[in-house]
Length: 108
Length: 121
Image 1 (tube, rainbow over the protein chains, first blue to last red):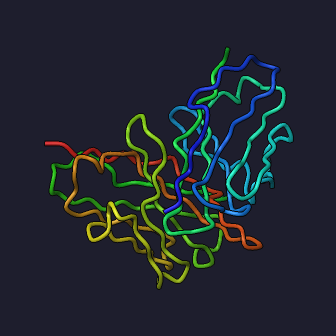
Image 2: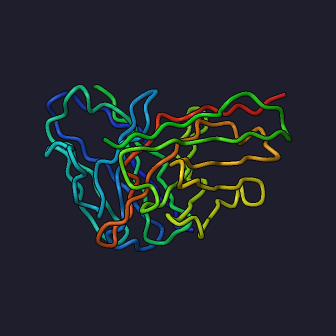
Image 3: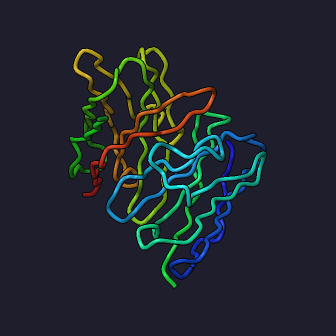
């Protein structure tokens, strides 16, 4: 089973600044990686798939990069609605689909 | 518009059973695989089970193998999760998600709002 590790667990950033979230896979997943956003009391929402392709309706301030075992989600110019928990998920070697433990993005 | 709506959660004692349902609309159900994902209180996301569009292929997480059964009724556009021999660590919000395969990429692009299952004596 591929283990996904996200860092940091919590990231404090001021509105308008850039946030960089990391995700590491225990073995190569090529670009078979997705990112999800989850706000309190809500279901996860797909942001990015294929490591860098934005899902439908996702603002351009969200970008994904990386391949193999190292991935990054960057949110440029944070908006108030962006403060949430973010999860990465690999689908290269499944089942199981495995998620990272999440990064909580909070207001500084 | 794609809609995904779970139901069937509730309070159940250890060893009990529960069947979750997930009603979908806005897409051709038989063309898409579906997945259950759960989230224990205050914890992260955990994949639980997968079923192919035809229903012929199913997979389960090790933690639920032999206790949970995923199925689908393509005539009614409903996904099910039969949960037997429930344990306290099955307590979670259970999400139903549509799994899209596109150009070799797989992702969960539509999620329900979740249904809470609480296993406790």
